[in-house]
Length: 446
Image (cartoon, rainbow, N blue to C red; front, side):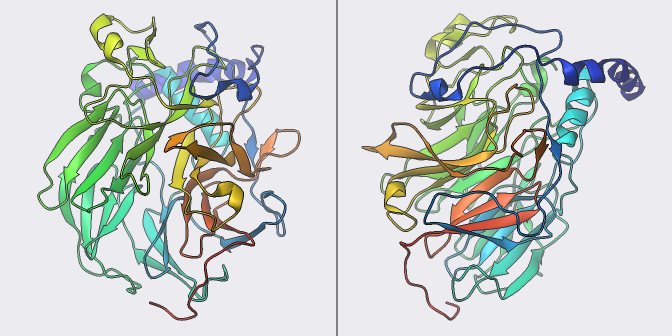
């Protein structure tokens, strides 16, 4: 009954929403770095939107990479690839997934779903993990096979101590697995439950293992944009958990992270970093998504404030005490880029200009005009912290007129040769970018 009412109201509003693009966003470059430009917030009955039509890639088409680098399609014909995860033996695991579906709670839920679908967000997910084996490191896999199937909207994965941990949308599942295997036949065992439920607004559960492998860090997104579905259903969400790998015991490691879509451990320091998608509907230039180190016990603002102590007036009741303790993120990525991928560089394996920093996959905006994101960037680090302007690495996912989109980058990783591997969930492709500088590889499996 609720769903029918939602669809009835939405049918009258959808065309108006898609065409409501009068408020233009500014220069995204002004929102990169530790002190992004933050304009005055505006609340909209109908927020500005700009939605490209997903068309995929034609034969011979590919994203653009910097001069001197080579891009190739490592795998095609996938089913909504989201995460790429290299194993020590050189195999690459590809998580193919999409959301499990959610209860229609408000007209906006139905409308935003239809709009996102236009840009390819509703492509059927495989609910599986595919294995790519490229023994000689030339970017052309000799084997492509399904490692494990029939998962429940999987996203984050981590391999520790001959066990593959998979973050389904509602639980962490542990599978016995040794690199070299091409199929998992043993049943998985549940390690820990994760917040889900009938709404499950942000369904992805990102994951990274601690340097010593004793803990798993899991990112859980909020159940709404800004608590419009009620504060009660936000219990335990918009947070990053620390999970004991052996017992499954979990605790809140950090809170106030609206949607921590990917996690990574900084090499050398062991510091946990995250990319976080911030809130919508207060303007094309609010609020910048961000890349930040994550402190144990830290609170990062959601829902009460953004970028430190900037109060979100839509939240009731207000909580000044929580606003006062909100931590300002390390580095703004500009607004509505939908950062989904994060991977640290490994020295000069790809290029000297990418020796120290992090690659970020920007899935791209659907509620901003002009569009923002739709690229993979490199954020340079200085003394262990993000610093300076980013460098585009993969671009031209969008057509020149921005009316159509060929693909949308999600997860990023570096393979054992130092090449950059990128999941493209609209192009149903895994891309591989290599440079003139790379590590030697063995021609046999390890």
